[in-house]
Image: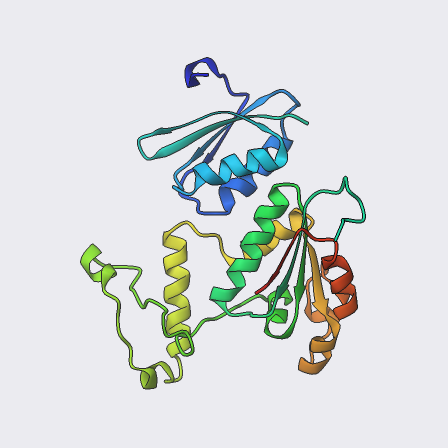
Length: 81
Length: 173
């Protein structure tokens, strides 16, 4: 799925934060959404791609898309439960 | 060993035995990250890990005994920041050197966007990490329950082992 087709219900900007804060903030932010809603996360931590994928697998919140835009890593998660 | 409840979330049970600024990070980072993944997490604080439960949290670090610690400056031009200062051990023992090292490490972490120990401990509390103080070492070192944060629980070896026997991951740090 391309990023253009995903619309986010909420955006979380973790720019400048290092491990483990992007994961912690993502975990908090997804709980603020309704089931089925989409959270967009922006991170500048280059450790985020494997971390966010692991977080998605462990929590079950679906990782719809992840890609890099220059120095930013962008993730879209759908709250699943 | 099979888990007592097969439907329980994954569990991480750690022992935190060190309380310096550098060694405070690994258990608190792993605990908060695991709890953010909806795992159950326990940290058993014993010996020099106990001060991490103090209400007034102020961990320090010294290069003595950490011979591989890079001594780099968190400020100045890029070339200057890359210099690894070789400080003779005798100078590291000079009173006040530990506080210099501590402020340099704190500044470096801040520059890199690393959370403080207090922030990570706060995240652990918010995420319901089970923080347990070792009662025996508290008595040995003269810590009182009122010295520690209210979210702290208390226990001993048997209590930790029972919890840890249900864990998927156990770490001694």
